[in-house]
Length: 374
Image (cartoon, rainbow, N blue to C red):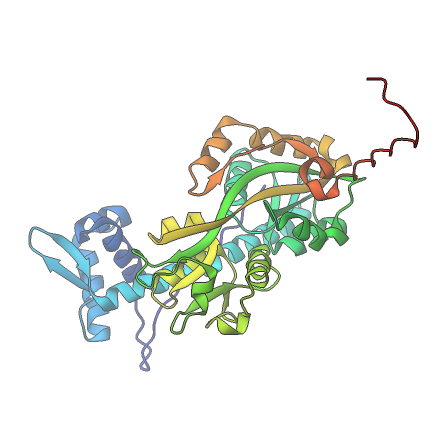
């Protein structure tokens, strides 16, 4: 299969048309990661002389330094240099999953025009890091696929309408499970569908390192001066967040930033890490990647939903083999907050979700006048 790759690239232009070279931003990112310009040059594959010239061009454009050089102590970024790096990270966090979906979609369209193209495994899934890892493993194993990220509800609806072969969605454990399953109920059919276990993961609050605003619970989000960044309506994470607000009697309008949304967990983490919000809600993995503090308040399970008849398809069997492999499960277990629980195990909907199990038959009352034989 021909793979399409799309990466975001951005720049800043002056009124006279002069633009910041994208390589400058790449170098600044590497300086922050490695602590020196020389190490950044090695990581970027450019000479020190060329890198220094690029940095100087950027500094001339802004009229102030981007990198502070300290003899014997390496290099550090100035506040402006750091702001440019965080802008780059926000752009990548927000756009990468969307561009990955678009690349997969374009690749699938190209394959349709190739007579010998193999059958594609069509996956519509809520974005997460276990599904992202699966995409990488499928590509490495040359399993032709078309992965599109969307909200959990849209994913299971896509399977119901025949638009995909596998749908990725997540369901909270505990008190909210039954209501979440009812929320997806219009698209679930216990008679014809199965779920494939994938992982458990932690959802919770992402806050700045050291938690300077002392945000520990959802109620703290309603305090004056606390800025919040939300997930978009229709996402499973937004649905879970709203369920918790309702249970705790917290009015959404009391949370500053409730209506401001990002479309991925990583974008929420980047927003908080850049200092534009004091807290966000999402999974633990990107919080750790952006060196944020994380307060878990919910464990949920991530499943793949499919029609039972598709389980015997060779391409689905190849996916199951990957899910059951030690290599994939070890990769999932390395993701902060994730555990490969029941990974690759096929379950009926009633086996997976207690609320879909038939109610036990009532115990018949003893007949009046009957004597005990004891």
